[in-house]
Length: 351
Ligand SMILES: Cc1cc2nc3c(=O)[nH]c(=O)nc-3n(C[C@H](O)[C@H](O)[C@H](O)COP(=O)(O)OP(=O)(O)OC[C@H]3O[C@@H](n4cnc5c(N)ncnc54)[C@H](O)[C@@H]3O)c2cc1C
Image (tube, rainbow, N blue to C red; front, side, top):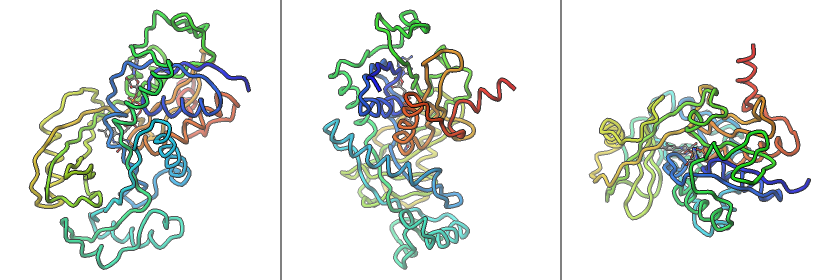
């Protein structure tokens, strides 16, 4: 297939994972991004393979995990920066039921890559409050989110493929896909929680889910693993930890609140009576969808216009695979899975 020129609005995780996929397939990309990011760059970037409530594997885990690891390792090389950090997540089990789920699942072959079998040391782990024992996850990692976003902007700026500005509707012609004098073959909107404020795809139910985290300094919190119960405690090095994250539905407000800070401190205090000082507080807004599935696909009337959104709380796990699937759909007409396709909403609104 001939090389095509694709305009991408939004250089967060959705936009950049798609762009790298397109470049690898020989296409050209041009970004429009205002340079201020409140999700991809604010995220803790953790990739946790499990959904702890019933101790199940995350949706489509095996395929997402394989692609995610190789994508971020490739990104390290491409962007010239360390990004990918393997980490053991130690789940402090929160009930007898959760413990039983762990005991059952860790014996199943399909969980071997993710759950370790509980050892006597896990059961009696003493560096955090421990009523039901603890268990260690395998294959988890975190991506340095701020570095990922900023280095990607630098990368596309160096390639002269970035308009660092607000998308200017008056300079865009949706019939010819012309933006500022250049006609593009395809246009993709990847604007995250701002979708509702753009003139295209704004009827879709992409919600704005505010999240807050705090960074603390402590000589007492264990630094080797990431503790988890009600919150995650991510060791960043030099006795600094990220604690997160809150969920505030339908709230795009970017102000840090004392309530969120207190909630996170309560969760941390419940893990152990560590002394710590708060360094700062971060705020962002996730693009979420009620059915917890991302939304990908083509505009129902405007030809060659696409959407990649709704990455929700597990964006760092899902984005690389989904970017490939969207690219296959855009260029090879390989249908998108019904669970992620935009058609699930168009069908509803037409019926
Ligand atoms: C506090 C918090 C913690 C999180 N922790 C994790 C985690 O540990 N693991 C995980 O997997 N996920 C996590 N997430 C979720 C993750 O951040 C999101 O799934 C993902 O970043 C969404 O990426 P996106 O590209 O869709 O949106 P965004 O990151 O919001 O990117 C959209 C981009 O579009 C640009 N833009 C928007 N409108 C315009 C416009 N009109 N003109 C020009 N540019 C525009 C913005 O500047 C932005 O750069 C967290 C989110 C938050 C808020």
